[in-house]
Image 1 (cartoon, rainbow, N blue to C red):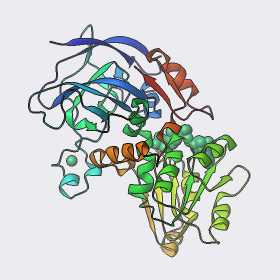
Image 2: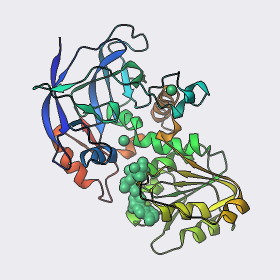
Image 3: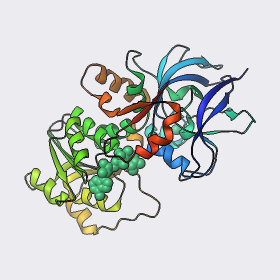
Image 4: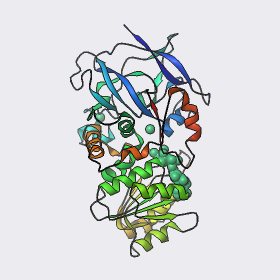
Length: 361
Ligand code: APR
Ligand code: ZN
Ligand code: ZN
């Protein structure tokens, strides 16, 4: 027995997205059907639509979601119908080389549902990041469901499924920001702001926000930035050094994804400081650095993929911190919209005043 729901697909490269009827099979072994309550609009959904990820059109978009488990397939014991969950795109396999070496946040065999969701004519859909949550319901592997406190608002919880987790995780997991550290964040969109919130959570003493847009710097202050630098008018490396007694920051997080900002991050680090790349570069980008400057200042250059998160550990913890008033996840929700408004949300993505548009059901 399958069921039919409404969902948003990207039919072909650069074609407008549209609402379609989606056919969802009953969950098979290890699978779950989740009734979606909220799903954020992320840049990656736009990249799918533009053909920038792969060409397996049509895509069922949406991957930053929370909802309630409706039914589970054979052998599923980790979640049950009625559980409130955040969906994740890192359902670790436990068996790949990364998992076996104790680094499951690099797992490269993430579990997804084995069965396919389709259109009414039988066309198979590719769910974005193995999720596909711009839909009233979706089919996932049970390991993609992480149970959290059901009292949290769904539109807030869903954000932890991607962008906000990427930013907070870049600070607390990859950057290992410690109490009293100085942290600089270059690029204060949703991801950079989340990195700022993560740095505050970790007890950073100084949090320097860098952006080229003053409106972004205003928001960054609300997220916890103690200092702001507009890098259009001021050299950010000099400014970060000046704000850290001439030393540079203990942790510098790059949340733009460009060589010039990565280079700024590199030179803004303190001796033995950590540079974290969370912005996603394009394949053509290259970085050239004098080796002597790597050698002379020590430290480490890291990249952060999905905030090096473990959903089972990090999602419930961050929801609890939000519920206790120690982390303001609601500040990331700029607007709630309907399933039919996703094309407009894509268009608004680069407005200075939108952090996240969230589809609510
Ligand atoms: N220097 C400083 N800030 C910059 C620069 C620059 N040269 N160029 C752009 N920015 C700022 C923008 O003003 C904006 O505030 O970087 C921010 C980027 O934010 P968004 O476009 O909202 O992107 P976001 O969702 O935060 O993602 C940032 O992380 O996960 C990745 O794919 C994602 O590469 C992207 C990055
Ligand atoms: Zn694995
Ligand atoms: Zn995303």
